[in-house]
Image (cartoon, rainbow, N blue to C red; front, side, top):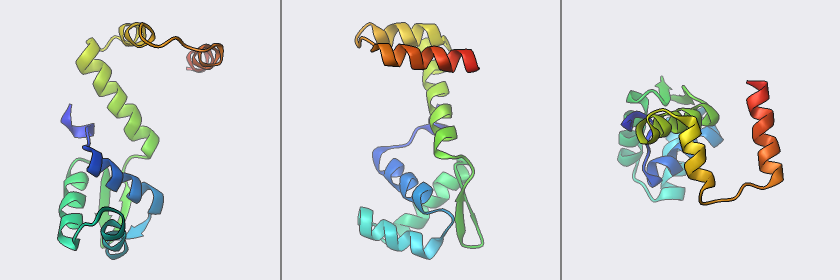
Length: 117
């Protein structure tokens, strides 16, 4: 599953990129220093790792996403359901609602999503 699993700090960095893109790598390094306290080398190391995983790309110093935030979240969710519930969405939902009662609004929203897909 590791491809779409990010640690807390990596996720904060990814959020910075999604919020700023397209962004020059130098400006990204300055923002990471300000927001995360990172040195330029740390920024470039983590950026390279996320690019290798296919989440972002750095084309001649311009950083953009290969996956939107929503696409990334969808893939994370798919990986989680596959790994934890043998790919069974009904088993995931059953486990989720066994601990948290859904509101009528949430139930209607889920029904709408299912009907549209």
